[in-house]
Image (cartoon, rainbow, N blue to C red; front, top):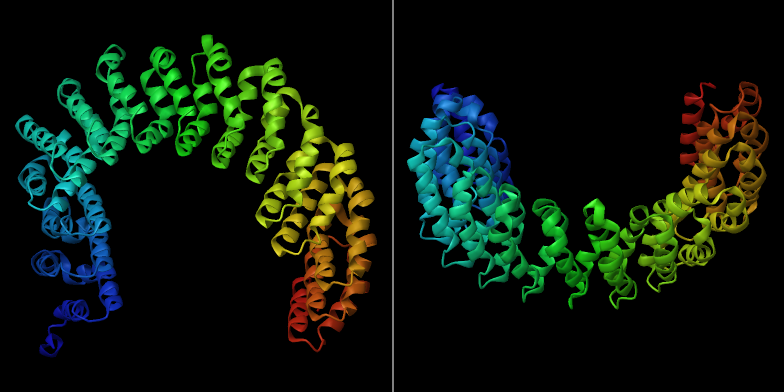
Length: 589
């Protein structure tokens, strides 16, 4: 071993080499993750001359090891001697950028982009730019796809001759024979356009954009739609109509649903990029078509954008466009055959009420909300209920209350516990909007029924819900309507329900205040300390610890202390433990 000669400085590299050659992948992975420590031990000179060449030669490992290596090298600038030596990191990263596994290549490109910023303009031309050229003209498609992500980071800082070469390489890759390369080029088109001079955007990028947007592969065409947003923001308004819109119109009617889906998904961004005039003339009809698309996925993506699209319409003609063009399509979607479409619409439709105002909401939107509240799909009903606050601001919730109740009751008793859980979470919001009388009359029984649900998550959520309701309606309301019912559960034959009483007391004690807690809740907790079930008894100890700070100090000494001392000698280990913990926390020892 090298250490035997007294040269300890070689020891770390020797260990690393041993571990990197180990058959165990985990060991190899661990040693890669410790690279920075090893580099520190070796010093900058030996990291450059020994460690990096060694790593460059050993790139034939498991993907996860290579991934870790690609990530580590991105943070190595200072370990190789700072920005003036950063080019030493290029050879191993170049090799990693050509491997077959996409995740490793992407990480290598990410690290290369990071260290490109640390090259001086001269180093960038001498070291970095040749690497990009080598990757761009590599035989194997993997290196060419990696090159696509590197053009935009070196373009702004090189001389005009080199810039011309970079543009030429990018053009070549946009028309590469391999779809994977064209896809990579299309995904970076918008990013590259942002660093180009405007004249080149018009002369180079637009033709590439048009070509990629009519590529034979739909996976390339849909990425061109993404680039469209960036390109449209760069061009002056007068050029948009001639240079971008023909391609965008074509994409909105593409034969592949995935391309149309992408247009729908990016619609709000496109709308902002092209401005109000083109929106009125071109995007409104396109949006109507997407809302009526034959593919449910496209309709759902478009439905998701309804509120945002309407908000961004030019103010002078917003209401007229919505009423004549958008609302008829929305009405059809309310009774769509696909539940995802209806659900997407339900999550945004309430937002239209604030845009259209009170009269239009009552006349046109209210019937749609009511129809959705009766939909057979629980998600649709839930999405409407969860967005009620928008409507409440405009027309008040009373208009909806008659239809709201049956929908809430149905969701509250839905067979899927996640649906029940979601409706509980909206209860405090609903309660605030409906007012205390309506709540007591119609919804109180539901809230109490959840406390004895067979799913623990529901019982837990119902407990939190009670606390929020008490915060909203006050301690007096709690004393009259909630506390008696909660305390009544202390005698329930099911021990889980008895435990729920304790959980509720924990949650309510602070909101109800000292008086109610000491006089009404405490006696019930103390009585439960003799319960036959150990789980209940140790929860009594936990409850006493929780409500202790709220109770008056006299009761703490005379009533709580003896009970905790008795529980501290219980036969059950857990009861003992929690009782002792409560005694020490409440300082009753």
